[in-house]
Image (cartoon, rainbow, N blue to C red; front, side, top):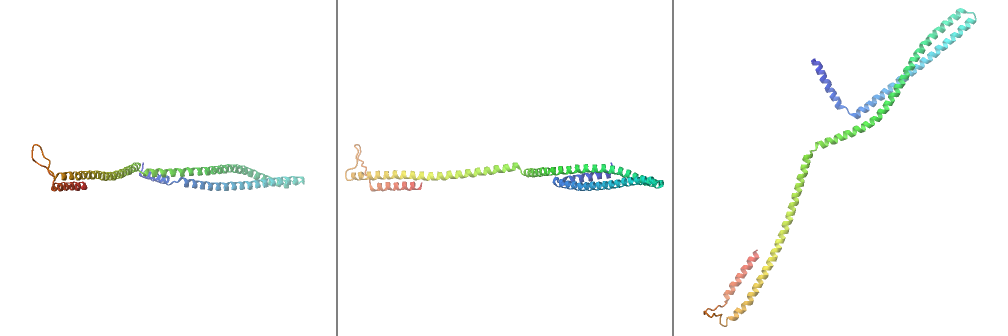
Length: 266
């Protein structure tokens, strides 16, 4: 295979590919209908021209036959008058018109057949155009639906489903974390309140206990002072006497104050 043939085939293949890609079904259908309409116009003009020619031939045939009949009658008249030469001349004219009529008759038959064929073709073309119009609307609707579906599929194809779902999962995880932090913060805040109330409640119990201890100590202090004027507590086995002094009372008060200070610091 020569280089020219190979290059020619490559060029034709590329051109065919470009043409195929450039073909829009809707535009091609519209242009096809336009071409068919133009063919219909030309066909109608051809039929009209053929019919007109047929009519002219028919008129010429009728005229030739009329002339032939006229010369036939003149030949008979001349023969009746005894003029054979004139009768012969009339018969020659009749023969000429008869031959012309025969030619015109053959031409008319051919034109009639042509006109009939053109009429059938015209009717068939009109039917095809009517069918093409119906198909065009249907094909345009199908082409529009296919184009919309293709655009939708291309849009869906450009969307990464896996990455989109991963993004949704990440956002869901973040929302769950935010909810967990919010719940934890609420629990912590509740725990702080509980601990504060627990401290208050425990502090009040300690204060009550301290007050009870102070009341007990204050109640026992007069009894100890009532023993001071008399004799101290004596044992049957020794002479040691235990007496409560003001210094001891002050030390107890100091110890109580220290305990209260520690409790307040808790």
